Image (cartoon, rainbow, N blue to C red; front, side):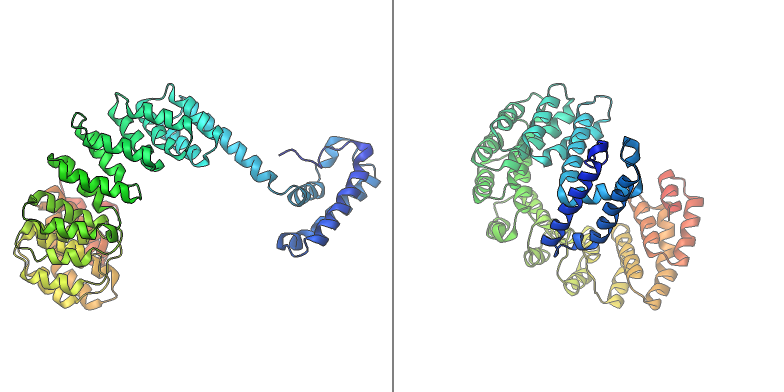
Length: 449
């Protein structure tokens, strides 16, 4: 920022200092309630008086005379009161210029240029739009995709023209970015274009899937109705699954009637009901009662999908007793593994009941998930009895699985469980795993504690 009080002609220095001091006296009189003025008032007066003294001594005849700490402090404080916001504006301008340079400079990495594009889009000014439009001219595909999505932040004729052009791009990745940009706009034109893309059987599956997911991001009743109506008219399983996934990400208050009817229809393929149950893990609201209901299904695929939905819900209600009860009678190892994962999101449970279920689980795929659940409980609870039981029974099994497990996933989960428990016995087991495993990824994971 230009220093308004730092380079003053010699003959006017004393006069301007007196005027500034008088102005600040008036400002502090009118703004005496301001915390900032109250805190700095005495320092401003001291600084101004010092500058006046300096002027009496002959200072102020050369530009370098005004680099003293007192003058600098006076300049800073006076600027902040007499010209509020000027520094912020200057900094914003500097930031804008830096972002522009980063975006347009081809020598910068793609990551830096894409981040600059996103940050510029948040400014939402005509100047920011002009820079993004300029960058489009010779942008590589991934950067063009980012800019296409970012253009959704500008509700202006120019951005809409560009988004229409990008939606018709021969590059599907760029077209998908444009769809996400239209979803940000979310108005009638956006809904019309996305709906046309979704139902166009001549378009590729990736584009139609993106259209469904983009529609799911638009918070309007019309967008929701487009998804529901399209599902009834599309036979392609992949596209139908994408539509269900999109519906599942919306508010459960809005979608609950649809899911209750859809999951109860016998003519709906199991594959699509599985997709519906799994998608509810991303829903806003509380789909837990519906998921628990289908956890009792006769079809193990639907039970597994329900358990997965419960496992992916953020901040679920307390349903540990129901899950533990289901575990005791569950015959499918896949379903048990997912119920164990769902229980990791529960804050309270009967540990003795859990120990009995896990230690009686003989299937490798579900047992390792159960042991990992026990490890999470050990790390959360200050329960010496549980820790002792875990060390004596679970740690030897996890160590063996980490070294000789049937597949890489089981071995990695076993290492994760030992690291999560962090008991001295578990940490020593990790040392042995690192020394004995023949798998580099397991060795690396075991060494990183």
